[in-house]
Image (cartoon, rainbow, N blue to C red; front, side):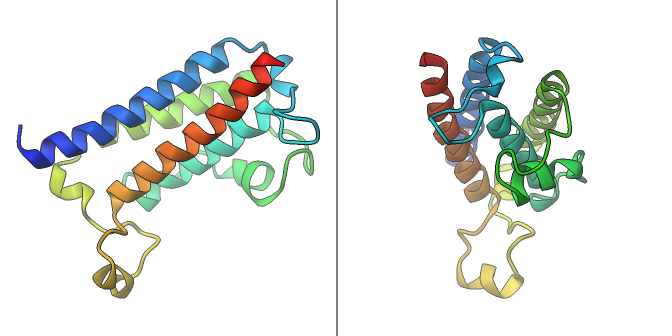
Length: 161
């Protein structure tokens, strides 16, 4: 493997590890337990699942990997806070969509050539990218992996309570 291949493989492996950890933790929650708040007055686990699913769904067009699969999640899980709107899906359906979106992302990540990772993402202009080439696909996936890790920590706390 080239150095570039090793670096990009490490990013994909990190993504897969964090997603797998989140999946495993979710598997320990009943649908009823997903209604728990991560702390008093804070988001429910179900909301965090919807939030991460919607954010990951947005990555598809942002990274040039396809069209969004579930834009209907935005209002309930990005635009508004927890419990502002009702949950648009059952916990079972949301779990299924979480898996569907992440499977599609992971499969696409595994097909990218190392050079593809350094291309600009769709949320940055050509001018901005010329000024800061670190605003690329790789940086988005690293950032989103960290985002899942952050919420994973919150969900762990909810499971312990």
